[in-house]
Every structure is written in structure tokens, then in C-alpha cells.
Amino acid sequence: MKLYRNLPIKNTFRNAVLTLGTFDGVHVGHRKIIERMKEIARNVGGETVLLSFYPHPRHVLHTHQSTLKIISTIDEKIQLLQETGLDNLVVIPFNPAFAATEPEYFVRDFLSEKFNLNTLVIGYDHRFGKDRKGDFVLLSQLKDKYGFRLEQIDAQEADEITVSSTFIRKALIEGDLKTANDLLGRPYLLKGKVVEGLKIGRTIGFPTANIEVADANKLIPANGVYAVSVVIKGKKYFGMSNIGSNPTILEKGFSIEVNIFNFVDSIYGEEIEVNFIKRFRNEEKFTNLEELKAQLANDKIEAEKILAKVR
Image (cartoon, rainbow, N blue to C red; front, side):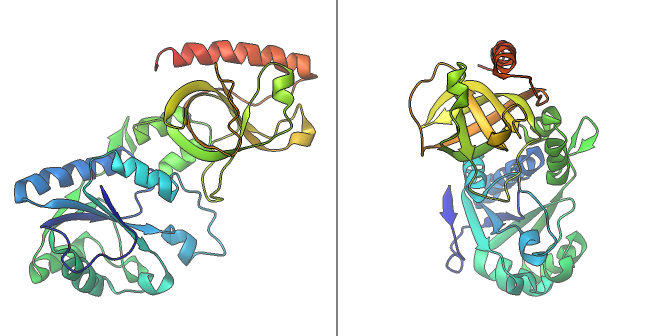
């Protein structure tokens, strides 16, 4: 996949089969759009192009009121899109001036003029341009004028739930990891740097890597204990993670910790990837460290049972 961080040279692409949007999470609905784009590109001798935006438009247009948390940071999104077999990803810096572009001008001066557009593929609810006035109806009126084909992908359903980034965020916040993962089509992932903690875990036989997430807008799943897989320097491990306020050790405060099974190396300062496979209990407060240690031993047994099914 070729990555462009700014606008490409005019007509860089061959018979571009293009879609656009934030694609937050790169969920199963997004992947269906990409698969359809790949099919069309094969038929027209073209290449697929996904036009995305950074930062998220709501963080730009609603600076003082948006509490939106993102499912995928820009680096995570690039990684996930790379895995889909997409030919080209163009990340456009999103700002108020860009948001103020009238929809027809956007189609004429941007999509048609700069991308050698053959086919535009959009999701069922896509809107664009100033005041979000651009939609499928407008595009249907413009496609012949500017010489491109248009296709709309219907809403995706998973167990009668419409797949959307909004619903996935809600599921993660409420601790419904199964629904979130089903709609994502993969375990929810989080990347962060390993930082030093209080090192209490190692004194009770469960050393943990404390994760610092660089992007403050990244959505952190609900507090609780999770079975996870962990990627460190390209190698996969398994373990369990606790997200929460650590009520047993009040001085610790909120943290994201991972106990990596059968791992002894020092990885302070390393970026690791944590994939959340199953949430299996709420965070609890224990009377003392011995009670906590006993519970962690039970947690490890439970996590290993879960992970045995996905190894």
C-alpha cells in the first residue's frame, strides 16, 4: 500500500476506484467497501484509493464540546488498512477551511480533478462538504457531469445490529467487548509505550507492563480484566490485562497493565500492541495484597482457558 500524507500530484492514479471517510476502526462494514472497490478495480483495470482525514473531523469542528474517543489512532488505522490489500491511502489534513468546501466544488476540484476518478464507492450514510450537504442524491446528480461511476454500499448487519463506529464505541465503553470485536471483525487493539510503575506486581508474582497511550483521544475500553494477546518487536505473546483505578492500591491510580505470560525481558520504553480478546471480570477491591494475589492466580487460569481457544 502506498501512503500519501498530503495531496498527490494531479492524475497520479490509474482509473481510481475511490472511497472517502474517517474509517475509524476499519470495521467489517468498512472492509466490505474495500472488498467491493478491489473487485471494481480489477474489472476496470484501475487501482483502489482510500481518502481519509486527520485529525477526526469532529475534533476540528467541535473543538470545545467534542468528547469523541477514536477507535483507531492514525498509525493503527494505517496498519489495519495495509492489511486489507488496499492500493493507496491518502491522509488529508483536516481543517476548518477544508470543511467549508461546497460539496460540488469538492467533487469537481478535488475528487474528479486530482484523482483521475473512475468510480466512487460510498457507504450508506456518507455525507461530505460544507454543512455535510453532500450525499448520495447529490453525487447521483453530479456523476455524469464530471464523468465517474457511483456505487453505494448498504448498511452492514451483525446479529441485527447496524455496524457503525458509533455502536462499536458504545460497546467498548460499556464493557461489551464481544459485540465490539464482532463488529470490528478482530480483537480491539491498543498501542502504547511501556513505562515504569510502582512495581508492586512483581512482589506478588505477577509483574506487569504499564502502558502509556500517546494519543489522548484513543478510546480505552471499560475498566476490568481481559484476556489479551501482545505483540512485542513483531513477536506474539499472551497474557491478561487490567484496566482501572486500582482500588486495592489507592496510590497507584488509573492504569493499563498487562501481565505477559512466560516473559521476563525488560521492555521499558518499547511500544507494544495489546489485542483485547475477552473481558472476563470487573475490577474489584481486595482487603490486602494476599487476596489480590489469590485472585490473580485464578485470573491467569481463566485467561489461559480463553486463550487456548485462539492460539
